[in-house]
Each structure stands twice: as C-alpha cells, then as structure tokens.
Length: 117
Image: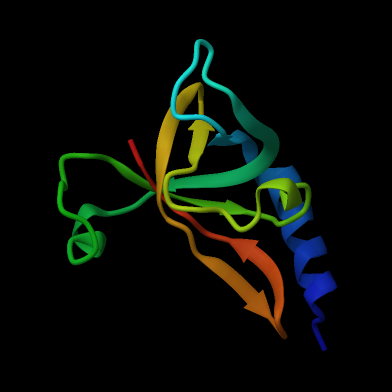
C-alpha cells in the first residue's frame, strides 16, 4: 500500500529526473526597492494548459496559463501556497492563480497550482 511518505518520495525522485528549477516567491510587503519577499528554489514540473480546458475558470484567455507540479518537500515556510504568490519559471515571474493542495490520508503530498503569465 502506498503511504503519503512513499508518494512524496516518488514525486521528489521524478522531479529530480524530469523537473526544472523554479522559485516560489511570496512578497512580504506591498512596496519597497527591492520589494521584500520570501522565496525558495525548488524543483517543479511545468507544462502549458490548453486555454479551452480552463475557459470556465478564468477570464482572459490571451494570457498563457501553466500548471506546475511541486512537492511539499522544502516548501514548508511558504505552505499553504496562496493566490497571489509567485512562481518564477525560466526567469519570468508568474502569478499563482489557483493553488491546489493534494492530500493523501490527510497529508499534503503534492501541490498543483495554476499560474498565469
């Protein structure tokens, strides 16, 4: 039987092999130069989302959307991820629009946010 710890370990291995480095960022102040933030560099799997598949959830379909798969490993200072957090992919900051926290037996095993930009 697959346990939550097994699921996280399996995801961590897959992200090391096929993922890429991303930065998860939360701004801690509305202003500043530079604007203060907390950020963590983690592995994630990023893929574009078909605009038709998300048409009912979002308004502006001209904006590219991506789904990012993240492990909870190493993200505890920023959990739970919130709408308005940022994910930097290939040097480009994207807006976290729909945080989706996936649990198994009550334990967070995966985060699959929808990001715009």
